[in-house]
Length: 329
Ligand code: HEM
Image 1 (cartoon, rainbow, N blue to C red):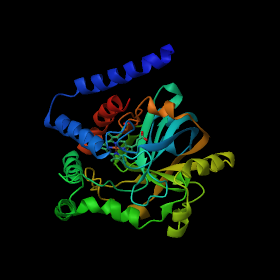
Image 2: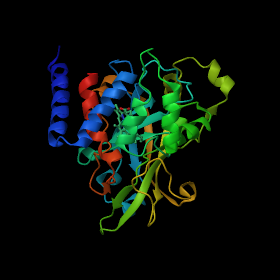
Image 3: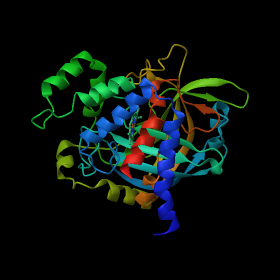
Image 4: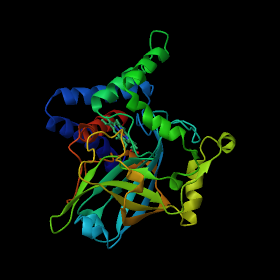
């Protein structure tokens, strides 16, 4: 075993300990711990992530546009920088078939900002989340826990959905779209409303969206049925070789009165709003999965000039991911 291999689990344990020690033991931390525990139970106690369990690590380059600086002074918009990213298939099953329609696809990435201003996003291929708060997430998961017969109770799941109709919206959105044909043929959204600040101190509410440069691609149900269980990595490999695995990062402009703490809702007319292209993220190579598995993608790591919302659904993500990495390694 090399020193590097030995150091990794120690670093991970320290990360979990530091993040958790920094958070006072509140009802919120109890909820976050219970969420991760319930996710693990539902995922069958496997060793991979309990969400986005199946995935592929990649590397690339983010090249900002000149327009980005007018919105945000963040160092990631200064010049091209290196990216480590991970595409995933949602849920806690590391063997889920790539053509599964009912789960989301994830895109997590770290823009390194020349080593001086890391910025991380953990996005999905839907503009909305399935719950609006950590408490609702816990209740959503608990409603799916198996009963004495080892199976989830459909009555319980229905009763939860009836009482919390907004938790059905993301599933309806995904069901209305074709099965993804490629990780690089999808739009991904950061979902939360972020505030960007430029060098003059002007601020703007935005949502971040990654738009595939080659357009969105989907499979018919028959095409999806004919696909092998693990086609997404090979498909990505051929796009990388053809240099067509790239996304434009755009900022969707927020306005006064926009909702900031209910991620189950899009803003009014969000899809028709003006956007500003902030840069292009080109995926340049597959990377060994250990590179992504040895750390978390932390949506709260944002270089000065980009700030996340004061929303418990957003702030719970760092402690949740820190607990999770401690358990999955
Ligand atoms: C209270 C809110 C949330 C909790 C508790 C939570 C929990 C988790 C956990 C425990 C993991 C596994 C992390 C790891 O082991 O590295 C995870 C991964 C993930 N989550 Fe969340 N999550 C939350 C909100 C969200 C939201 C709003 C999104 C969508 C924008 C999201 C998208 C993802 C994705 C794409 C992954 C896979 C990450 C990767 O590729 O490494 N999560 N989540």
